[in-house]
Image: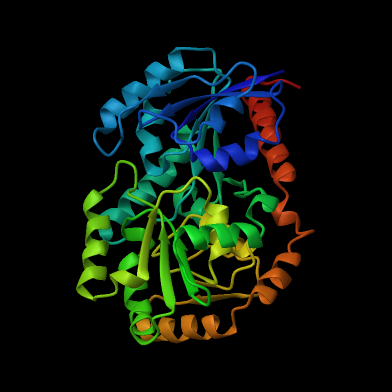
Length: 375
């Protein structure tokens, strides 16, 4: 049997990583996006024999009611076996709008952990946890912490995966990126990958890097990423203003969104990831697979950490502690250590894309069987 799934606001790159390892005859996917175009064109070609169409739905940040109505309309367009929500807490209103749709497996997938600040936020989260368990047929999470916050104890974990070989260190790609960025020989690059919004904590990263950049003109901070789709464009401007006011603009590169992030990891010497919160932290996983020494905030789920060459620090520490740790990592960084670290992952089952893709297909099969009482 082929399963036809409506994916609501999925992470394109992540979904591609799964679909690359699933037969077109077994699974087809359509999409409901809040943007007018698909960023990764490969997604359409990987959508199966019977999939590949997409609808535009209103962003839940603009109107939760319109988002719910748009999702309901998209679901009515075809006979789907599953609807798979990736829109975190906003999935709740979408689920409410389709409660009368029997025979369709309703899946909610938690991809993030959001700080619960204040009594009202904590009450909302507690209420939502109870309701998700009542109105969702299946609950998935990318990590233990992401699942517990959104669902309590009733959920299954589907690990995020990356194509290992694509993110392996490549000396030729390193040279090309550095040449394109006009970096002279001997320059050390501290990198970060992530769109610009509060959770990524760019302001803290700049503060931690400031003493190093001021004291050593051969160090560059490379920021890969752009504005968050549907997010606050002023946040990126604020980071640019911070860089300008500290007079370090000659040593900070805003690379924007790139189609080849693996090449940029190869161009780095140290990776820093001071996120305030993450559901998983894909960029950190990619950086570790590239062999980079990584410094990350201890808010990152433990499932993401696969390298012995990674150091977790508290964001409650003064930024100077981060500065010292980054400086020490730069002092120790070498291409030899990167290549040695990369070899550690050759047989790591946590990076087996085929294994996890099969788990996703098996999940669709088993959940459809449960929903329809099939043997």
